[in-house]
Length: 429
Image (cartoon, rainbow, N blue to C red; front, top):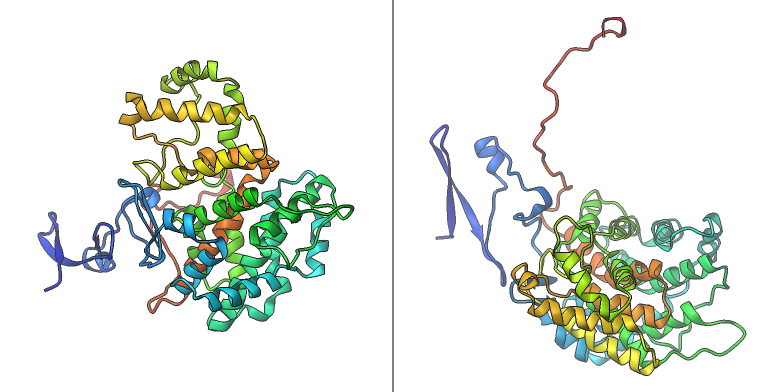
């Protein structure tokens, strides 16, 4: 007999059994899809803190233990042994590729990195001082106007081609957003370079001289993409799924995800970390700012600490901390921000106030320092996040669009507005 839970309406005495569903990891969930039919009631859960919106076999997080799995593989193992392109294959197809499968997939992505020349001209419609994320929202959404030959969402091959294009073209679109904001020439992708190396040359090369990406920097960039590839049903992923449930084309759905990621409470957090470290300015000022962070009446907050899901050390932060030091060492960057960050982390892991509140460093804490050292401006940090997260979005979109019981998303509400009232003519008000 399947597990069930009995819910009773005390006002009527009616009792109904609801099935309990068990996943391969994580807490069980109560299937309440028939709740309204049985009781004429909805649940109330702002922010979906206790609601599973879907079934998924892509990513799992245990926030209490600090665990992150992609398709069952621990993030630390992928960070140590995999590449972003291999991780993309894993997320999209469900399993790690063979050597031949990876070579073929990598070649496909490489050949899709070019964008339509008409899309190149699209940038001239933006103001020069437009935020790169604003440009990203527009240009990614416009992909459906240039690649409408693969928009049949019910065709498996069309979905696959769209996914390849999104993975491949996002670095080009992102780098051109940066180049446009600086009035610099738009480089074309190079097929002789790997994914991260190609992005770096798109960002920093010039037609007047040869450019060879630093391998340590390229490895760190590839690592950033891996760590940001997917993160369960966060705000932007849920947005992509909700948009996709209307059967909108995948480019429109990804554009919706980009817009959601732009929010400072989501993808903009690493930019806030840099601003915080800049404000602190010197290690000798840390104690003062720690006191400010503990003061409820002070607006200052330690950015990069704590997470909506993780109540332990964010596993991605441990990985990226090491990469941060390697980048600073190879570039010979004596960045006081890193020294401040290390000291803040040391204090926060021991201080009773932060330990009690489970305010551990998260992935944003060190990712901004790496990008700052590479020469990426803060307004591009969330754009970098977009490149990595696109594979997660499109994989989640595919999973949602191919569900047997897929229906358009329609959250309910608790209406607290005015009761029914009659229209009053203007002269009688």
